[in-house]
Image (cartoon, rainbow, N blue to C red; front, side, top):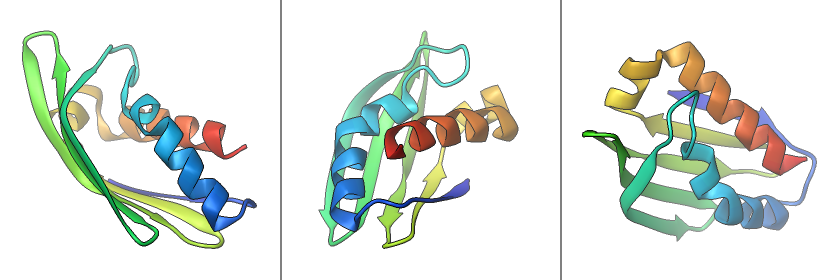
Length: 105
């Protein structure tokens, strides 16, 4: 799944917002409460490379991807694994996009 959202902040402000709000983006997607475990994050310049396991009840799904911050937009490229199949791509995309827009305002 790829989501690109325009912003009007400085690159540094957006990187700080991504760092502060990262966990929130992937928790409580749709109606599901998701526990994040084995989380790994590493910034390479203005690109965040991440991976974690999302636990939903007895199910777990490995999620990985990147968040690329430019002067004009933020692009999230994520493989949501089982989570996307459970919720559907439209629901998961909409929930993540709304949360990202929230921390960019």
